[in-house]
Length: 129
Image (tube, rainbow, N blue to C red; front, side, top):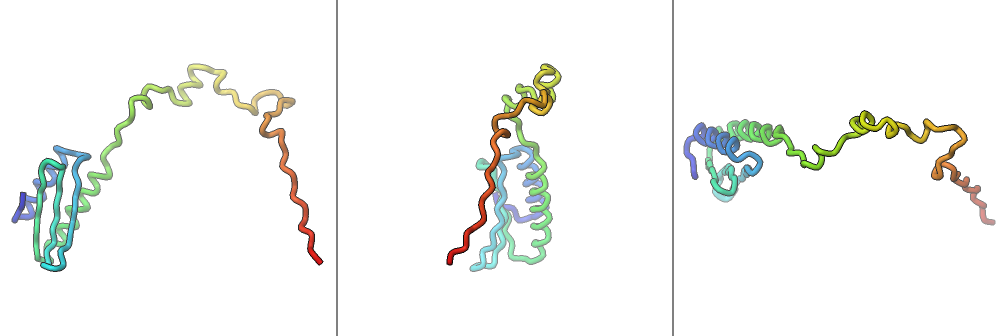
């Protein structure tokens, strides 16, 4: 739908975003061949369009774009159900105290297999004659 009044367009954009949420996309385009600035907001069902040739609308476009970007950025991410059901590391230690012991807590005579290997030092380079 093409809007001629920017205030109505802005209100319709905010309502569309509130209704559709994450599916909403914004596109701002400058058509240099005709000197036209076009802003579109869509949710794949409804498209809102505002076109202007006036430079005075640039600040309004910018403020609306910043407002919409803040809303896009501040929306929460949905968590997967598997992440919610699995106990975290702090919950595991509360449920099973033996899970909190680490390799360093055992007797000093025990050595982890990976740490038992030592790295060889490289020899000095021999200079050719």
